[in-house]
Image (cartoon, rainbow, N blue to C red; front, side):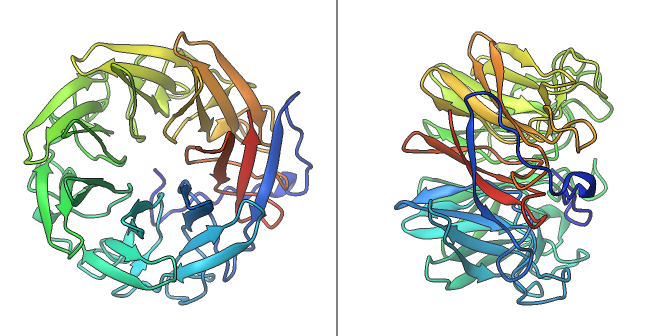
Length: 404
């Protein structure tokens, strides 16, 4: 997850106007290119489908306030599949949020999300918020993180609904003194704004610094921690954990680094008796700390690396969660592919079978087609939709569709 204070905007000037060169048989289409002003800029988060309309967030743009960046503090936007975009809400920092980095949750017809900054508190730029917004643009800050170490700081991930409450993670804060600013938390929140720290990570064997969202399976929460757990990495290689809604935490699997996955920053996907996920680091290829992997893990802790990404024309550095369509998983990589305008490639769309057979379906070229897809994909009637954090016709990212 990119630092909220140092954004990786993904603008590659040398390849800015290079035309997209799709892989054979691929049908990638740019649905919308952000202009970087009132309409938003740099969509790091993924999309959701609500009644046939797509909703997402941008890290910048909106122009409500220039207290954040020249173009504003970020937006919630809607988009038809035909490309008609509308800003639902523009953030203002201060007591309001700033810089949403993830996808939204549709809960009871209202959209819920997090911002990594804003909300006030003792953190520079704000300690982050949880917000609600109606599709008509009425926004409410449900909870503003204060910077009290024991309460949680900086929610990078999105939310889930479980048992009538919202659950999420913060990358820092919490009761642990092992980390300078706390090792992160799992928190619950009512829709009336009553927050509770369910668990404080210690960054020991239990994991630490979770930057991905959770899933709820049979009343048990599952997620990933990017640090702790053990293994050969300084500070730990991360972990898959389970947790009851009352805070009884258990490490399901501790990543080992090396050819294993390392420091996962993405959530899990449940497919039958196994969870599947990605990590941006680790694996057998010769990248710095590996090029990333697709892995599976059972609830009993039996883990397997399904695929190790490679350098070159293959994708590398997967960040977004996987989705299952038919008998394959689909996802994106931030780097890799044939896009020569970016150092190390401009990112890919890929498929991978449970057996480990992987295929690059599309390589972004850093032209009008976008570059650096950071989020995962969604499936709307057999067409996949996603975002690129940079490039596009105006240099501020895109929403794209892709026919497998």
